[in-house]
Amino acid sequence: MNTFTTLFLVFLVISYAIQFWLSTRQKSFVSSHRGAVPDAFTNTVALDAHQKAADYTVEKEKLGDIDSIISIIFLLLLTLGGGISLAFKSWSSFELSPMLTDLGAVATIILFMTIVEIPTSLYQTFVIEEKYGFNKSTLGQFFKDQGISLALVITIGMPILALILWVMDSIGSLWWLAAWAILISMSLLMSWLFPTVIAPLFNKFTPMEDGSLKDRIQSLLTRCGFNSNGIFIMDGSKRSGHGNAYFTGLGNNKRIVFFDTLVDSLDEEELEAVLAHELGHFKCKHVIKMLIASSVLTLISFAILGWLITQDWFFSGLGVDTHSNAAALLLFTLVSPVFTIFMQPISAYFQRKFEFEADDFASNNAKASKMISGLVKLYEENASTLTPDPLYSAFHYSHPPAAIRIAHLESKM
Ligand SMILES: [Zn+2]
Image (cartoon, rainbow, N blue to C red):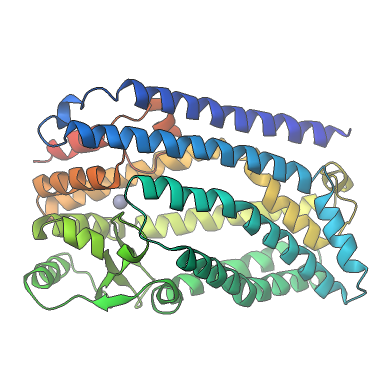
């Protein structure tokens, strides 16, 4: 066994051990706080809603554990088990051009990965979500969504991959700079196209009707000096009872989207506060900061890959005997999460910092009390636990835990 194989296995064990340990903590913390609504919420959340959230959280966590086990097995089968090598060998036996061989092999692996994820995804939607009354989807809808996603991978993902592989082959040792530039431009283009081209493939977006809610939102937007390309209601209820609101798009192609489920459950002032929070993410430059951070990380990753691709041990250490650029790209994408798990709590920390800043913005431009009551309704209706394990939430949560977030908002009242 070469040293890199050992290193890979050590990191694999460490990263999954951390995940299982945190998950065990989360399940036992949530279960042990199931008996009573936390003090801060005794007047606003009923005991049965609190218990439903606890049960729902624990069940999802258990499914997550199974999902992790499947991922470990699959990752080992693809790498040390020879799956990637087999895919490349099988495709080269068709004697196609090198480019088509590479694309075929990568597509095969992506297809397998999609298929492997279907059972847990089905269980999540049609067993867990169904049991807690969130699922509104049908099997037909589910497979239609999978089909559209796969079609997008083939029509958009494959040409981008082909372009990157071509650059890797023809530019020389600095290919990774060009590949990075391609990937970043494509992801900016996708973000820009998302609201008008991609999102409508999955959902229907209806412009918000004139009336008091729209007037209220319009005046918030004017107050904050924000230009958007329209306010839309999305038929989220077609798939799920969970509610949300978000901003999407870039530059002049920005849209404000409310899930129909959210509009049904929050009052107008609460919706205004939730939207003010989302505006806060733009006004505090969170979107641009995230974009810059991810561009820098992508550049570093490509630079590392540029070096790894010249090292024999990188391939042989991961059980691959095909020294092709496509195999390197695939290996790197599959294996790097194992080595970068320590980045997860850092990124979660910054995301939570941004949430506090956006809440401050919401308190200044709408009513903090309405942000709180809106949040409590969202926690209750989404069955989000009010009592997460402190270490688990520090590691995984992109939003501050309910009690901390609400205490912060109360300090702004
Ligand atoms: Zn936010």
